[in-house]
Image (tube, rainbow, N blue to C red; front, side):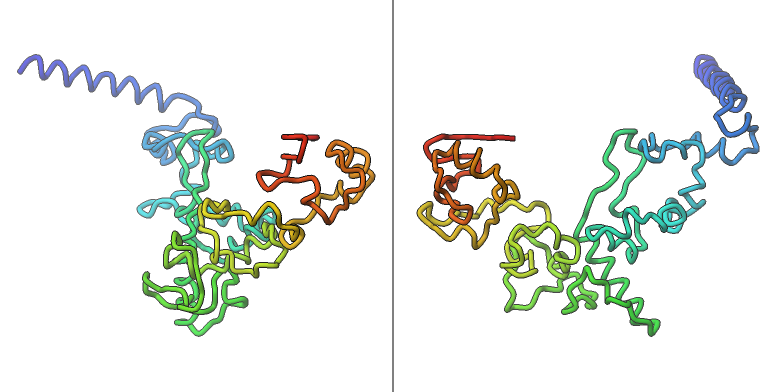
Length: 277
């Protein structure tokens, strides 16, 4: 019993010393804070180190957290609502209608941790919720949230499926199928619009590459239906370097098959792997 009391006394002494040092130390907030300082007590419950971008808020928990509620989107919006670099870029313009931050952005994971965990499924759920709320109060979203497909987007059931006539990638969830991919990824289209704007017909939400894709016969001569030559092929570079390396001085830009193989663009017929840049 005496040993137990001695142990508890030692713990209490150490805690008192630690608290005394902590509360008498200047944490960069304009001097030392005493026992009555809310910011000082908040720091003692720090769940982890903030990212580099938010490092300046290390000792200001209330900038993001609301007592009893935790991190709220309204606190994020105070700083980020006028971030033109995000709101004016086509791939990230959807942030203007989100009103939800922490489902995709996580903090307190270290200085160099990635803050973003893009979850297309969550994005679709948030979109449907926003549409339902606007419908219930009689208002209408100006663009009906362009990042959602209009058909079925307003349904509240998690099992909402795409129309039977539309083929979608089998790895997409029912929620992801309600997203209008082109609203964010139009600039990523490598098909120049030839395959339409419904990316989900072939692609899943986690990657662009298609393991199932099989290139047409290497004897095909319709390369330009899917591929466009790089800018250098429309300059003197093509005749002076590209055609010379391939040993095809009379090659035409539109006849990709003259020099290239279907394994990879730098795999040149009769030359092998060639990477000029």
